[in-house]
Image 1: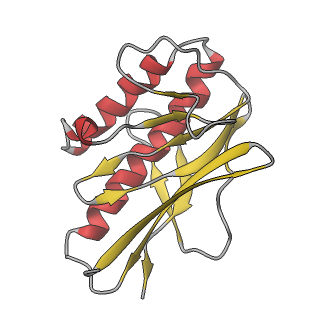
Image 2 (image 1 turned 90 degrees about the horizontal axis):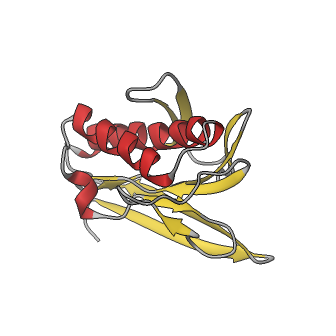
Image 3 (image 1 turned 90 degrees about the vertical axis):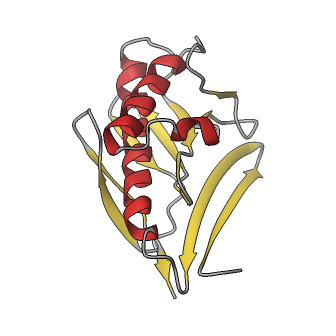
Length: 165
């Protein structure tokens, strides 16, 4: 398995889907912690932009633009091209996947799962975006957490961190 593992699960219960990714490190490469913190910042930015975008009747493409900007500011300009960035989820694992030109409306309240990657690190959680804010629905309370500061928008989110073993 190597020095660390990234585990991703999308499950359904009573017809509704939830998505999570967790990282467990044993003897991880030196770069993992920094990249994980950066990818968590992109995930927090996506969630914050979703909540703000929904309030403005904007689109998935608008959120995608904020995600691209976050990657750029953190020094990973083309990273978004290596994996889809996620989107709305509910009765399927993704009702839609955000792309630069997708005009699907960002609706509130709605569940979303953004799953950015940064060169060997990934962050993904199911969040509920409402007019009042964003709540992480896929937290267990038993995994370590970190506070991820958003990029280009004001805010921060508490998200799962790497589990070091």
